[in-house]
Length: 112
Image 1 (cartoon, helix red, strand yellow):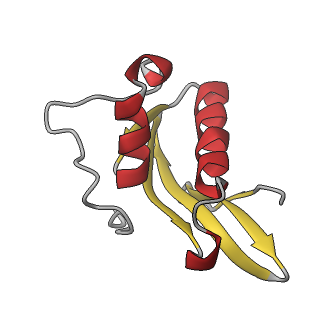
Image 2 (cartoon, rainbow, N blue to C red):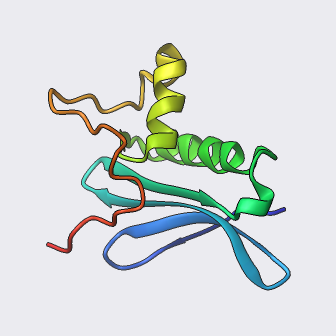
């Protein structure tokens, strides 16, 4: 399964996997300045538990490091991964006083 990438002119993007002509997994984000807001990760239910979300997460982490982005972990999955291994992601974790709780997973940011 190959991880693909796309980003539009509003800097909304995703890492995704297609299989049999349909998308089976995605990690969606939006970039503003040097911040990458990772707000949704999803895998088709029948494919859960196979490490697919982890592969998307790892690709997002590599991308953030390559580009020098800090990551806002608005998605609950990403927030849990950061919290489990804070030292591993300290270089990219954008921490705020009112840090995202992860409860917003699946909600796209509003257009500005």
